[in-house]
Structure formats: C-alpha cells, structure tokens
Image (cartoon, rainbow, N blue to C red; front, top):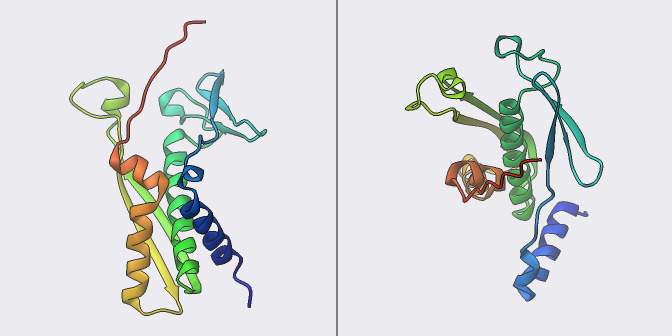
Length: 168
C-alpha cells in the first residue's frame, strides 16, 4: 500500500541529510493592504488572497475573520499538519485528528489603555486524536509535533522579529 505523505517526508529528509543547505529557504511573504475602515486584504506572491476585519465594537464591520482568529487557525492547522506528518512517518494511521486553539486577551493592551498590559493572547491548544496506536504513542506523536510545528515554535519561542518602516 502506498503512503504518499510518508514517502514524501522520507525523500525530503534523505535529500536534506545529503545536503543540509537544502533545508534553508525564504518563506512566502504576506502583504496586508488597508482597504477601508479596518478591513485589510492580504495577498501572497502566488495570487493567494484573504481578508481580515475587526468586530463593530472595535470600529470594523466583521466582514471577515479578525487577525487573531487567523493566528489561531494557523496554529491549529499547522499543529494538525505536523501531527499527521509525524504519524505517517511512524506508520500510524489516524482515524480522528482535531486541533482546537483558543485564546484569551485583554483589550486594554490593543487600545493602549494600560502600557503594562500586553496586547498578546494567552493560547490554549487541545488535541483530540485516535488512531491505530496505543494512547502513549499517540501522546508522544502530539508532543513531538507540538515541539516541531513551525507556527507553534514561532509563537511560543518568540523568535526574532524585525521592523522596517518605509514612509511613502
């Protein structure tokens, strides 16, 4: 039986092991442009498009998801993807995989009402999983994936971020 995810991961892993320089690359950019009010259109280099907006209480129209929801969806889908990849690599077939990301925030941070309060989100991730492996193995797969999820590592580890301001 063919396992395309497992085969792709093994092929890529072998290529990178043979030439580690192949592991490094620049990721696709995302550019947000303000459309109207608080609505933004985000585009990528290959024609990808999505929109964001804020709820009416913040001055938006709620015409699209807010950026915080997109962050949670990116974390949830990245974590699910890495879990599925690692399970495939180990030969584990998943019957159920559901990753839910919730967060709490304090609006005083985004509104600048108290400089001691962060605008950031406190994030909680819940994974529901079932497959053809015992509970211990499934937990290990999830823990490994959580430690190797690119979006999760970026959010959790606070990697370096830079800001360049170009006044147009």
